[in-house]
Image (cartoon, rainbow, N blue to C red; front, side):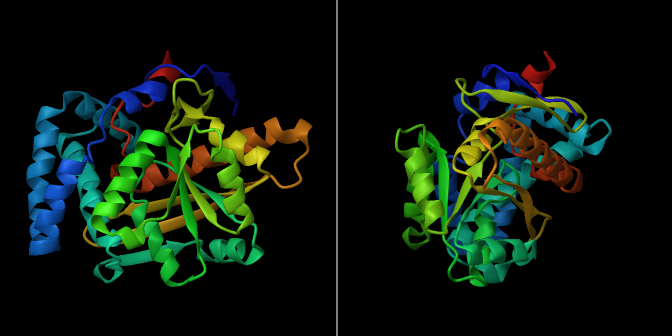
Length: 310
């Protein structure tokens, strides 16, 4: 399985940054009003109207969804598959309102790999949690019910950091974790400090900015350009890396999954590139497994594979 560096340009590097997030504040405020006043069943009825709108009137997202689903399902995607894909996305946004209100009682949540997180917390070293735009991040907060000493910070690009802070303040200020804005000069120092305090630092490691190097790796049968930056950061910090995903299975069912990806402690400088390459392959393999198992949970509605294929 070969890897090679690619320049940070093309659809994977920039299109997501130029495209407004579909989970915008207006939509969330409307959903919050309906859901928190009328209840989750009423809110879920509205989701079908929202899903129909996006399936009909966002052709670029529809094309990207069809192309991705063809890879994940191993067959041409049908209209019903695309509808299910968008509805899954809308459902996780809707459930975000309840999860941020700590209404975990509304959900059936299964946790895989919880012992790994217990081990990380007990070690006092902390860890980087590498996720993706896959399923729900908010559902991972449910792990804190069993581990009261668990502390989580989020590291994300500055515009997204500002957006998520606004969202959390509007819904439940008490649920707001620390958000570290990547791209600032002090970002690495803040991440290092939180790890030293034994915290978990979450990073969505599937997207990059134009200036970042990426590595082409097999994903769902074709090369995809994945950002190397998060893995280089982990190597520099000599940090432990754990894959995380909160997969939505419909209704009220979620699976939280943690998998070991790498531990860069003690890796010699001349061995870092090999260790980074191995970690990125394990991350891509974990992503592919999740996409095969729960294909509607992939929320990159743009041509993720486009520039890797050119």
